Image (tube, rainbow, N blue to C red; front, side):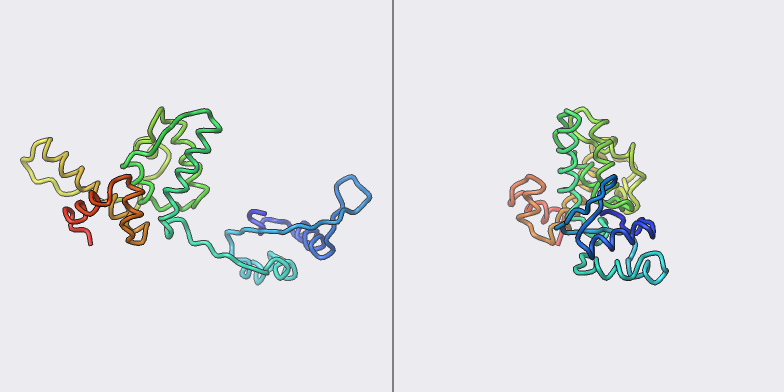
Length: 216
């Protein structure tokens, strides 16, 4: 049951009674039905605070409060972002009969640096819309059409005056590559083997780039 704190007082009472008696009365029926179920509830609000404020029944809270799992905001568990994004891409492909194959490196970096105030729900909706907008690969432009600018996005390096286009592109590319490697390493807890697999490059290639960019 998602957002259980949105239940009205009357519905909270009905839920409590069904949990205590282990039976329900279906709508339009005169016979009770015995239940044998496991109830899992979720809430954005802290239930203890809702109980103290009088918005949630104390007895129902204690009925539900057998085991708690606290989930950090998505921005505080970046290792979950790309696997979830890949899952939502595959699900949307199947649902909409599309064949969007992957995220570009720039798109992956953007996903990792965005704050995700709406958590997993926002990530899912963002990927779904990006799949709709994309013909093959989800690019940065597809994400930017549906997301606000990432508040913690890396700043571009300073470009010395007089540099030509080729030199500027090389500097920007190197800066972006370093940023992506740093984010993926952070997401894998510093595990280089896992980082190399996520980046789809060889371990030796990753090691060489760590030395090249002076990444600890």
